[in-house]
Image: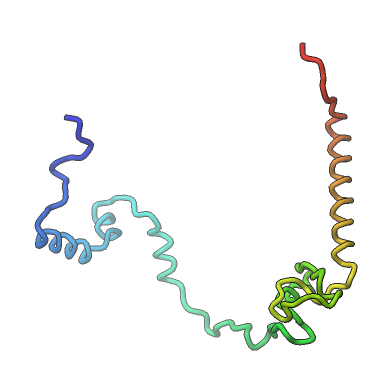
Length: 149
C-alpha cells in the first residue's frame, strides 16, 4: 500500500455528512476539545490573559494633541518634506532650480537647502572611505594576485 492517507480518516463525500461535521466542529471549539482531552492548545495562555485584561479607563488619542503636517503649507511644502525635521527626508534637486513640476505632490523635500544633496553625497562618500580604511586596518592589506601553493 503506497497511500499516504488513511482511508478511515478520509472526509465524507455526502454534503449532509460534511454539514454535520462542520456543525459539530463549530459547536465545540478546538481549544475546548483539546483541553477536555488534556492536549496542548497553541495560544491558550495568551487567549486567557487577553480575556482577563480590562479596557483602559481613558482611551489614548493623540490626534488632538499632535499636529499633523499637511503638504502645501509653509511648514510642509511637499509630501517629501514631512520627515525634514527628523532628518528623514531626501532633498529635491530640482526645487532650487525652479524646475520641480510636482509641487506639493513631490516626494522629495523642498525645505532642504540648495546644496544639501551634494553635502549628503560627500558625507556618504567620506563614510564609505573611512569604513574601507578601518576594515583594511583590522584585517590587514589585501594582496591581489597572490601565488597559489
